[in-house]
Length: 136
Image 1: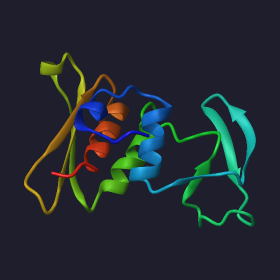
Image 2: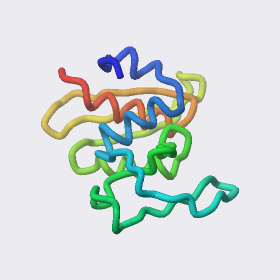
Image 3: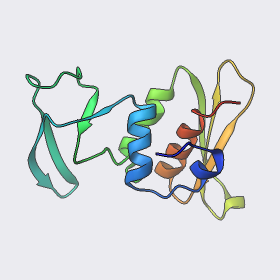
């Protein structure tokens, strides 16, 4: 993937590209082949990790199914949980952005908020999380 810039991050669409970046760069997960599909439910596929073959100590995701954090609020809150302790985090719904969500993060050792907005909370969270990767 190309070098990330603020402009690129703020214009990313929800989907596999941003989900993969967040999974690998923010959540510290790696794709792994040692998962198998147990069943497909109304809310999506359920994968089970083969603990005997996987060498990633659970810090992985099924190679064919990246966590959908840019479209699923449950997955997006896991991103917030991962940032918690290193960053202040805020999310609001703003009339000035036509009702869009704005997610903001600030490192504890800096006095600078980085913000991203999107039409959904999960996408705003993912964009803001990726902004934490950029150097000053």
